[in-house]
Image 1 (cartoon, rainbow, N blue to C red):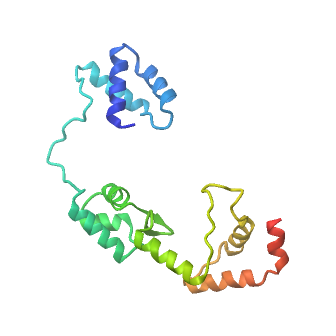
Image 2 (cartoon, one colour):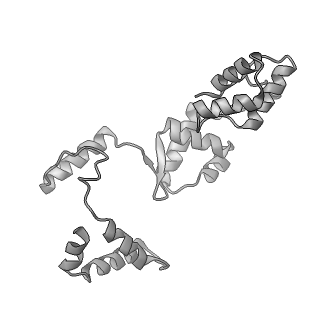
Image 3 (cartoon, rainbow, N blue to C red):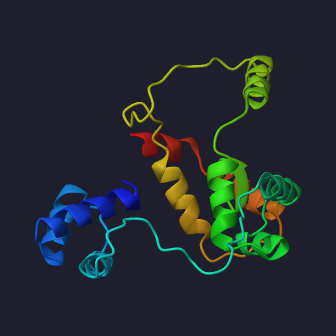
Length: 200
């Protein structure tokens, strides 16, 4: 629910002569996780008591800098494509806008999220999907349809990665190649019974 909608509900309860505490209880019951905090409700009740009945934010002094522009969206996209490990703060410093606005642009306009310390699109593009399908066909893989979120059909590899994680804990690697070599050595050292016992 939007902030303004909560403010309208707070105003409604104020006009019904309810207290801020009662309003908080009611909002928590109806909107558990998204309800505003008690301090926010008290602040709005205080405004209503002074006759300020608008549920809009007060005008702020000075002209706000508009950060979400087509130009900034394009610049941020270009920065991320050049370095997928770039940090929000670095982008914010470069463009002289807030870290929060940068995050908003990345998540809402570019539809990206951080994955393994790299910015990646949330979903594959049509071209990426087609390339994936071509590669799967080229390699002779058979696609098996499966419903999402079906733990009964998911491969049981929990034992594999939890044990690998314990083995790698505390080790420092200087390159991806070292990580790959260590991981391969770990799996090559296991005999068939290790994998069989893990599945059973």
